[in-house]
Length: 447
Image (cartoon, rainbow, N blue to C red):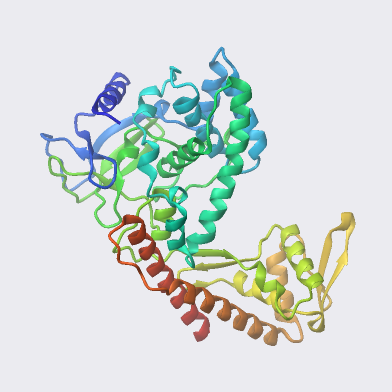
């Protein structure tokens, strides 16, 4: 991205009544283009929040805005592509589907399109700016994540991205006779997830909903150039629905000096989350975050026949659940214990399956049939009330301890102190994983 594109972007903002006199955009050494306090700039009171600029909501990119724009065009091929993407990916991440498809269209399918956001899209990061994201790493660097919580997450995301890209590539060829490739769809995905803001959540945690109802997930020009810091943030954003603006304000008590970089917080996130979503880690980040991994394999242990294991897994899926291990910091939820209890319980403990209507599986423990409306709570109560309930829970905790120890052994491989940024970031993730698993194991052993 050249300075000319940045200048055109700032002119576009000013043409839409955005006062950018207090800020400027500059290239940083390690975080792309950043947002800085202007130099020279007016003094900013440190005792109270101070507005730096307002972005009209009409300038933000939302799924609803993309849809409205596509319908306004005389050429309806963009609308047809949005329809195709929606139908192909339903019901997954609707806002992402609409906005990613639009970004792909603007950058690679019809770069000459004169959409209202053209100047903004021209200054979005290039593909090479996302090389820190694990989805863009090569196989050698992917090996650095072996045994971490990101290993399976990255593999799963790459499978989904390539599958989705195949669908999009086919539709683009049919509609425009234009050749695109998977890396272009991956670029759109990276732009979306690294810059999207949930206007309902100041800490940056996005919730995915229906694109025609969810208008809080948005890309906000200029605001999204503010880089993250968990320790040195000096600004935050505020949604003013009465003024229909998205405002960046200084944090109360902070003093911005002319030329100082403006930082916001992307939320309380672990290094695994930061690396997965944004492509960087923070060396002093002590947030443990959440560990989620499939434990389908534990249902095929020595206590289960192949048929029993399949029945348990099928019942979980039928009940809208998945055989996963979920650790939140050092906390082990009752749901996790109950999941492992289901893995170890046998017909000798009173477990049985019957076929219900439409070949659905009905699970019974003792004389208690598990209620479909609230299966996890019902399952927990049935296990606690079972004759061998205490023994079942002890076996579940032992199995869970074994699984956590296995992951801890995998995560404890020696860290590589190479100056390469990917190696360094993988080591930071591994360090946090080790701390999280050790804390969870201590909690389990103390209970």
